Length: 372
Image (cartoon, rainbow, N blue to C red; front, side, top):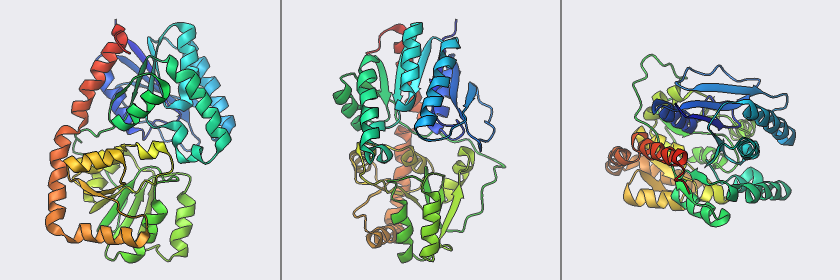
């Protein structure tokens, strides 16, 4: 009999590439997989996948009341759903998953995409941080089956919660040719940032750096809390013609757009341990597309770039210095071509086709009772 797994997220499913990869791989392996998220007012229809996709409608869309409403709806959904295992993806779904798995005697799994209590939006709000930390300290040590996205984060969480975290990296898969996929028109040549437009991503610095860079457009592909603020910044600085906001585009469109970029932009700021220990999926998306990138000088990126010169480490958070580093990366054509070849070499190791074998073995252990 095929084993059933329910994965729980708080997003609307469409652009969560990590969960698309995980659910697709486990479904192809023979598990009956369902991915549960929320339905937003502006949610697009989900594209067809080889697993079930369920979105719970919520009246509230943000803040404490949203989390209360969504967690209650998720708990009652999980109490009714036929399944063998339930996976909480990040801390904001862990309580209903943990309680439902305990009440129903199901396998409970925790997939930490980030260090939730250390993201900037939480770190700068002491009371909110204490509440999330209390929840994590109460629940995470009681879950046997845990994994996260990188070794630095796994070591920190293992130390913090006294339960061993395995690693399933957030790497890209080999893309199929997306023939016929249309993408928004962008002004060539361009520098690309892809991902959430949120606090701590260094996007205001990237925009300010464009004052010192000629001949290139900065393209931001994504949505988030800072979108309007950054658009206003561009207007105030007279950079409307040098910065282009694409908003949210599909993973298929990104796979066409990214290889066209001259350089990937990844300027995470040290605003919490989640970012400091991160190994973001855009790192591997740039790598897979053969696009050299500018990365933060944090532990995981130091190790990666020491072994594979897929880009350079950020030397300064001063916009003028950022611009100088970008110009140098683009103007040294010999080293630029070397970085592109290093992207190709690194992707032989850091691809989903390798990582999914670890995922499949990990879930085999979870269901056999051999997990930690």
